[in-house]
Amino acid sequence: MGNTVLLNQKNLTQLGDRIPVPTFDRSTLKIGMVHIGVGGFHRAHQAFYTHKLQEKSSAPEWGICGVGLQENDRNIYEVLKKQDNLYTLLVKHPDGKIEPGIIGSIVDFELGFDNPGPVLDRMAHPDTKIVSLTITEGGYNFNPATGEFDFGNPDIQHELKHPDDPRTVYGYLTACLKKRRDARLPPFTIMSCDNMEHNGDVARKMLLSFVKRQDKALANWIEQGVCFPNSMVDRITPVTTQADIAYLEKTYGIKDEWPVTCEPFIQWVIEDKFSNGRPEFEKVGVQFVPDVEPYEKMKLRLLNAGHSVLGILGAVQGYQTINACMEDKIFVAFLRTFMDREATPVLDEVAGIDLGSYKDSLAERFANPNIKDSVSRICSESAAKLPKFLIPTIQENLAGEGSIQFATLVIAAWCYYSDKGINKDGRPLEIIDAMGAELHQAAEKTKTDPLAFIQQESLFGNLAKNERFTTLYTTTLQKIYEDPDIKKQMQDML
Ligand code: CS2
Image (cartoon, rainbow, N blue to C red; front, side, top):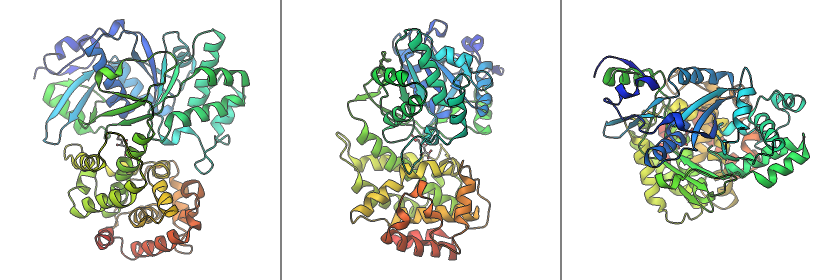
């Protein structure tokens, strides 16, 4: 290792002696993709695939411009600006090996928060062919109980009154699609990369509901011309820690303020439905299929739900990381039994995939000791996640005669977690949830009304009205409140 070098374009030649750096000419890339929501996941997934494609074959039309719409995107914006949009990806293997590489596919970044103009211009630019999204499960602005667009959101109300001052993704998309239509430019594809069943269909339905309130003709134009491919995206990407930053500096002498770490596994299955061309991602392993639904469902109901099972139970038990949960034989057995007995029976066949091996591989991925994915990341935004990952499995098993015991323990533990905010040993939990206050208020009524938590219909639908569920839930809950050492209950169930 030589002296410490700041990560930026000018220093790339020097850094190239230390770790792999982009070999393609970033300066000539046009921006074909605008991505909203440049978190760790985008940088470990779509930007990584795009980087690989640039390395493999020339794809000059497909550079990425990152976009942040919220105040809390300012940090990443400032770091990436300083680093000429370069960052390091650290791929962490289970055997301890860490594979570093500098990713060069993001070539510009715009922040809309202070001034929406540059973001709108970029999205309305003739070179832009795809606008992709990782705005999180909660970012789609629909009421989970009805599945309809939530017009009650104050930002949406503001945008309806002031179309030139967008705040949410819907305001931005509408304003720039209008610009494109008025300029007689072709529309772009809107590509959702969030963990939701039918993510593209949901994005389409929500955007059209919003646009129809403003401009019916524009809604028609969007309906005719904008494609919204559904997709399944996968790569475990923990939160970057100070230790990752220090590792990079100490081991390679690279000063990168915001590297990304991830597991080696990566998968992207997309519906081949694009309005205005697409990168040849199949050259770098992306699968284009006519129907993504079975893949999405499999991943959400096994991987994401599996994560939540470990996360919620692990939080109450006092574990800090997902791999720590997987060092506990009871957690491993509980997870597998949940998957086999409850999640799998309500899944569809997935052509070419052996579910047994898929579940084995999930257990290996979760156990990767090098990843140290925090339980708090997994539990964050559970109110947006569980209605998509876990609750449908319970509802479908209730509709048949399926087992619901394992998932019910997780819901009961989530109530305890939201009520008490501490683990079994009384230590405070780090709870990050946009609905945190509502969850707490509902959960703390448990003492007087055991069903209070699950009566939140926007999350649980009609579970509180199902006797088989409420009977099991109430007894399970009572046991947790008597003794939050949740492992005992888990063990008794195996
Ligand atoms: C996780 C996901 O947020 C969560 O709860 O399950 O972020 C998961 O790591 C990714 O979907 C993996 O592809």
